[in-house]
Every structure is written in C-alpha cells, then in structure tokens.
Length: 436
Ligand code: UGA
Image (cartoon, rainbow, N blue to C red):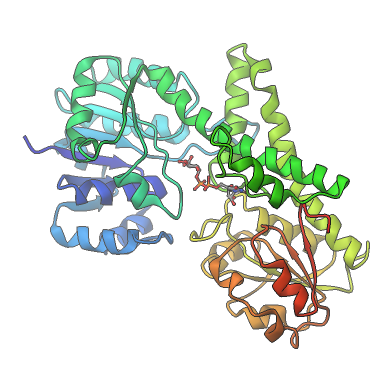
C-alpha cells in the first residue's frame, strides 16, 4: 500500500518534512493556516532560507506528489498526519504555548479516517502526547496518536531529515510502531538506529537532548569567563578537553552563546514543566545555563565599553552577523541582534550586516541601520563586532578594510577569526575567553 501523508504546520520543520517525505516517494499534503506561506510553497518557493531545501522543494513540486493548502479538509485522504506546528515560549512565563498543537489536532480530528495515525513532531512538554491521545479517543476514536521528535538543525535540515543520526518513536502499541517503520523504511535501511519509546520518554528525549547541548555551550562559556579572569585561553582549553572522546569536541565553541527558536525556549519550558511535575530541583541547573548564556551578551558589551567609553553616544559600531547562527535567516532570540539592539539603546550608532538575515532582522528591529555590503558596514566605524560566524567574514582581509574604519578594533564574539592575521595587520583584536 502506498501511504499518503499530511503535514500540519509548514514552517521550518513542516516544510522540510513535507519536501523530504515527498522525495521518499510519498504523496504529501501540507497544511498551514498562513495563506501567504502556502501560496509561496505551492509555487515551489521557500519562505525562509535553508541550504538545499529550496531546490528539493522546487523539484518535489514538479513530481505532483507534493501540495500545500490552507484547507484542513484536504487531510482526509491521508493515512498518517505529522503535526509540525510551533510551540513558542508563552507570553506570560517560561512554559511552552501549546495553542497551535492543540488546535492542529482539533482541526484535523473530523477528517481522520479509520486506522489513521497522528504523529506529533513538535517539541512539547512531557505529558502533552498522552493528553492529545486522550482527546482523540473522544473526538476521533478511529485514529491513534504517536510522538516522533525531530532533531534537525537549521542549516542542515535536509541532511538531518533524510539521514538522521537516530529515529525515536513514542508509541502506545505495536501497530503504531509498524506504521512508522513503513514511513521511515528507506531511512532505516541506511542503518539508522531505531528507538521505540513510550510517549513520555519520546517527548523527554527531545528536550533532554536540547538541554544537554545548551549545557555544553554554557559550560564552555563559563570556562571562558574563568579563562578571562585567570589569564587563560578558552579556545585552547576547548580543544584540549575535546580530544577526550567522553567529552567530544562538538558544541564547545565559546562565544556569545546560543539563541534561535529552540534551545532557549526549550530549556525554559522544560524547567516550567518539571516544576509542575514536582521535579523542580532536578532542573534548577538549567536556570544557571540560561543565565550564563545571557551573560555572554553583556560581557561583549562590557568589552565594547572598555575599548571605547562607558558613554557610547559618540561612537559608531559595525555588527557583522544578525542571525542566530550561519546558513540561516532566522533571527529568533539571536544573540547577535540582541547585542546590536542593546548597543543602539546605549546610544551607539550601529550598522548591521548579514548575508541572509537583514529582512527578518529589520522586521524585528526597524530602527537599526542595515547594509548588504561589508565594506559599507565598516566605513568610518570605531569598532567591529563579529557576532555570527558566516564563512564570508573569515574571508575578510583585515589589511583591505584597515583604510575604511576609523579605529582598527575588532571583537570576535564567536572565536572564529584568525587572531594573528588581524593583529599582523595592525588591529587590536579581542575575543571572549582569551585574555591575551
Ligand atoms: C537545535 C538542535 O541542535 C537540534 O538538534 C534541534 O532539532 C533543534 O534545535 C530544534 O529543537 O528544533 P538549531 O536551533 O538549528 O538546532 O541550532 P544549533 O546548531 O543547536 O545552535 C544553537 C545555538 O547555539 C546557535 O546560536 C549557535 O550559534 C550556538 N552554539 C552552538 C554555540 O554558541 N556554540 C557551539 O559550540 C555550538
């Protein structure tokens, strides 16, 4: 039997999942409530930047297997429904806002056919899947519900979906697992580890993974603070501890910390949920992880002040990078953009450059000045901040831009630039966690 899939919510996760599932040969119906997004996707255009996904989407639209609509009744032909809507931080606290997940399941319930399976992929507080399953038992008892957390990284979305390092499925019975095995058969055939879990464990795997990654980053940023105090170099420290395979060298890049639509809100929602469950103390450490992370942003601003002056009103600063990480146009909770806005609020004139994120950044902070040309950004500035590690910034020749700036001072907020290169060109070079 050839399966038909629906994907409810066509943002980052959903659009990627829909295009990738189509590329595996399934008929896929994508549903989203945003008519502009749907119109773009239906034209084969991606509403955000993600390397490789633009061409995959365009190719899949040509096959006729993939379509997008705002009409929920279109899911009636599907056997499996992937719920990929967002779970942002709620406006009034740390917890996740589950409005979209709950309404997605309620919207599709009337159209679920006999034996169909709803598969949640959104990141949710533990216990959500069971409550949705209970809800479905009342509104659509002919259907079942499973949870299949997603671990894709922005910038590697296609690769992480088609060749993930593991597949985790939370199921309440063998039948649900068998259906998911049918969907993922080509990926399982690559030797991808398959982990069957119960519903709460599957939900927890996702937030545990993101909490661990956030902890690693804040750990190395805490070491950066100690290195600065003690006269050490965090880049050498990270390299040295990273050779221990028990520690590993990934996610030990010290700098201005983590941002984006996932890590920050996931650790906060996890804390809020643990408190509800009576396990608050177990996740108290995440509060410190969050605090270290936000402190890194202030530490950069402290370096700027110590280089220029406490009063920044007479100074012009170039910020290289607006997105929360390279190869993405996502500026949600971006440390780079937050720092740029804070410097402007402190009175500095700030010019922001980013290869892909200017438009989303402008929507968030319309009063910042933006340019698409690095040389324009640095013209006449008193200081340059390197805050998102786009490849093109590592290609900047410091001797070439020396003639453009007012002062040759650069702060590397990502520990990615070649310090010797900049110093040999006569620049004052600072980096977080490197006291020299
Ligand atoms: C993260 C997880 O890595 C994915 O596995 C997960 O699926 C996703 O969240 C999600 O929950 O949907 P992503 O938000 O794309 O993916 O970004 P990461 O690559 O994890 O980077 C997060 C932040 O940490 C970025 O701001 C990055 O600059 C920062 N970072 C990363 C560091 O500061 N240092 C490092 O060593 C690594």
